[in-house]
Image (tube, rainbow, N blue to C red):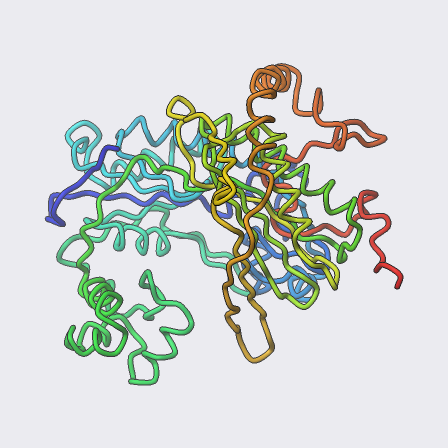
Length: 477
């Protein structure tokens, strides 16, 4: 892993590039008829959320993470688009191709934003502002999309500067932003201190409320407090971190590569699902997609986790860790299905998800071991249940408890061995002919093989009916 930058000296030049209304802008790019309209990308159903929206929609006070029902009330004429994650990934790859032409030190932190350390390339392309303008021009020319660029000597300042460079939407107008904002070493505190404390990384609603209680509302007011006072108030680690940021001290380097810690999918249903068959069908789709993504990344996983959120928002996760890693879809599926079957369901399921963790490189995989002794079944750690109930008066953390080990390790090992070559062949066919060319029989529908793609239903369900959700009524006693 390469690291860029060093001490936060005045010679360090960090850029933060942030695409403007990225998902919505891609939709407008692909459908020019949407230009100038309030477009919302997200789930249009009652349980959907806003993923992104155009500045025309922001004029109505709409923003990301807002419930779609609220957004629709604020702007009845809004155009909802379900979202096409694969298109956003395509444009993100094109964006990164532009960025890496200016420096190899590019740290992507989302599909639509990245940090760059250009300290070593300013002699080739000019100062930070010149590079920022060149990036904006090239992104507009090659992608047909707009971005904003912030420049500073730290990640903190660069990110806040990129926000200052963006357009601003009010009820009466959309004001174009400067596009590029550079903050010099001498200007940092004058730029930083008037900002609200929520501008700092690590300050959420709870921390903000606590700081407000002692009269701290701006970054400058936080900086005025002695560090040891903030450490006693918020804890040593958090207090020290926030005190440093408030004084403009941020020596984090740009890290070009991030190792994925987990791969998975989850889906919120339009209405609660009760049917065993429908839940398993949805789970199979997620396992199929997650396994394909795992193999595409040349990784194997040791831990399989299934997540359920019920109608009352009570949430649990069930996990099982195998002795050796797997990547074959059937091997993952047999564990995931057993985890799902091990959950007592006395109410409908609102959300279902699966994730794969404990990742190792494919080449470094070890053979699955089977311990058949009576004293230990060799089936890895037991499952864990975590409850999280969201109530009107706040969140209540649930308890954790150890459950019995899952008796499927031997079957997972057998399936990993027997399906290894078959899985490779299926991946090759899909790569050439598309995801719907071949797949498990459980994914076959009247319209063909229904394969889940990354990002499907990521922001909640749409208003359109899904035939897969037939038979979702509560079971009869």
